Length: 183
Image 1 (cartoon, rainbow, N blue to C red):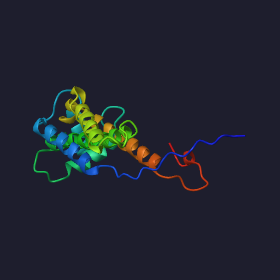
Image 2: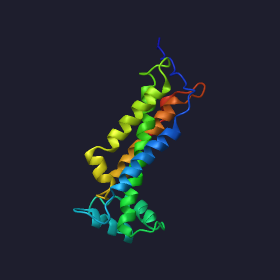
Image 3: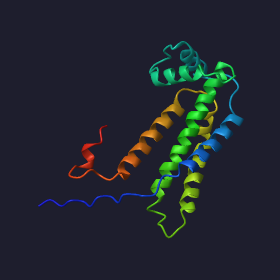
């Protein structure tokens, strides 16, 4: 006889997207205030030139960054190309900070149970996301395009947030949830 695990409870509380936007905006303002005005040392110039020309930088090449950076570089932001690409790094990192807030807030729900006010877990999640966004390596990569780290962090945060949201959805009747997850 097989034993079935009980389904996870369905959460009815909506994610605090507005607060996530504020966290992302706060990180973005900090990054823009400290953004590099031009290229920096190591691979920064190579990746900017490759994005501008839709070329291939040294292996592994990072085609997603090249395509996204090229599209971002075409936006009429009123700055030179190097500053626009550095701004791309800042925006992707700030968006990741907003997603990390959402993930942290969701994961804190079972730890900070409902008798506690919701602002407590939201404050803790915001503090965690902002501390992570101002860590030396993250901040350093967010103000200058030194490779593709901010796009990678945003991709990881987005996939993790989608998995968290997927896990919160009620399962369809008579199906197994794990059959729908495709990696």
